[in-house]
Image (cartoon, rainbow, N blue to C red):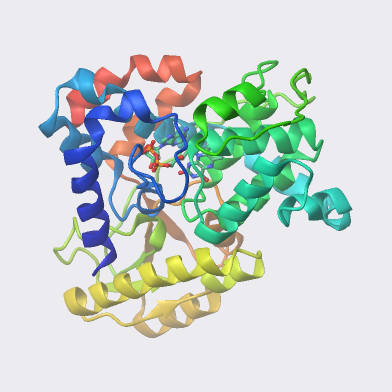
Length: 382
Ligand SMILES: Cc1cc2nc3c(=O)[nH]c(=O)nc-3n(C[C@H](O)[C@H](O)[C@H](O)COP(=O)(O)OP(=O)(O)OC[C@H]3O[C@@H](n4cnc5c(N)ncnc54)[C@H](O)[C@@H]3O)c2cc1C
């Protein structure tokens, strides 16, 4: 089955049978064989196999707003985090610098025990194993895991975020980095998330006796204050153009089937992400999406070129006399870093969706400020 059909089928089943109970049940982690109380759509949404608006519109067409309010808010958390990081790209930059400085720390035995599920904290080991096996963790388990990593095991949060990003099928630079910062007490300054034995045993199906967690730790702090930078969205030029699709906006072309650009191609980031040590499971998932995008541009536009670096693009530009290279907008993350590195050799324009352009500016403050804008967003797009 095609991955988009798989995603739509999954969502339809979830929305018919479970969505109405989402707000009541969503906080329980019933274990990896019982995942119906949340949608488990995140791996598709991260790659925009289905996009946020489709989900919101579909949920809205089936239920009253009060029934689905919580679900819609969670989908908006993703948009909020993305906008927040776009407004403060320095946070991503500093995180990457920290990771470089922490490279040697990876030899530390406590770090090794944590990523190999060999700590003295049983639940933590279970989640580390589950993450590696399945590429997924329930939201509550992500919070507990991050909290235990930072406050009980006292490991650098950046290495935990890195471990998640490389193993989660839904790995997203904004949601992941900022959620780790939130647990640490850096995102909402001075307010951290402390996992407690009581809370874990209430919301997790497996019960853990004798959990010894640091339930009194203080939040982390940092010296840098991250100022906002203005958002920038490129103006498009379409003459002699090459459109490069990528798997972080997989359904873009499904919604724009008419031939708007002169040439089409796929940009494949997998070699680059492999060098960044992404897990095989994540790379395989991305490769599957790439294959489907490739089939689609071939059947819809007769295109069959796959690009993996700037040399591939430069060669094509020269041969086909291309003036404008356009890609669906890449927000902060490794893929954007990779493209940005050769933007001086090839001028690349990012095509941003109207939804992102409209929503990102609302991430200028906390989520509650963003939440107040949800009615405005819904009235524009529904
Ligand atoms: C430490 C930590 C790291 C995280 N890393 C990621 C990540 O890399 N990628 C990612 O997509 N989410 C991340 N999350 C957010 C959240 O845990 C997942 O989006 C959610 O668990 C996915 O499961 P689901 O599809 O069943 O979600 P549902 O509860 O069914 O929610 C529907 C959709 O809304 C979005 N969403 C829900 N909760 C959140 C949230 N708190 N923040 C942002 N978006 C949300 C997701 O796209 C999700 O698929 C992280 C959370 C924590 C605490």
